[in-house]
Every structure is written in structure tokens, then in C-alpha cells.
Image (tube, rainbow, N blue to C red; front, side, top):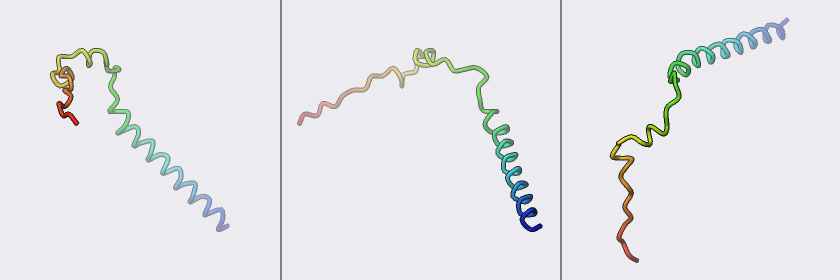
Amino acid sequence: MATRLRWEISAALLLKIVLLVGLWFLIFRWSDRPTTKPDVAQHLLSNDPISIQPTQESTHVR
């Protein structure tokens, strides 16, 4: 009798954890997804001065 009760409590806790993880994914993960895929080429071709500036090498001579 005690082993059956222990099994039922374990199953109930496992079900609760599965449902809470599913709810977390539903609320926090799926709502952040963009509806369309980002256009990487458009991002790279943007006129952002930070991404256009070439990196300058140091003039330090050893």
C-alpha cells in the first residue's frame, strides 16, 4: 500500500513538473520568436558606421 502511494505521489510530481516546463515554454520562449526570419544580408548591407569601419592594425614595431 505504501509503495503504491509513493508511486502515485512521484507520478503526480513528475506530471506537475512537465506541465510547468510546458507552460514556461509557452509563455516565455514562443512569444519571443519573430514572425519572420531576419534578413542577414540586409543587416550586413546597412549603413551602420560601426559595421563599416575597418579595423586598423597597430603601428607598433618590435
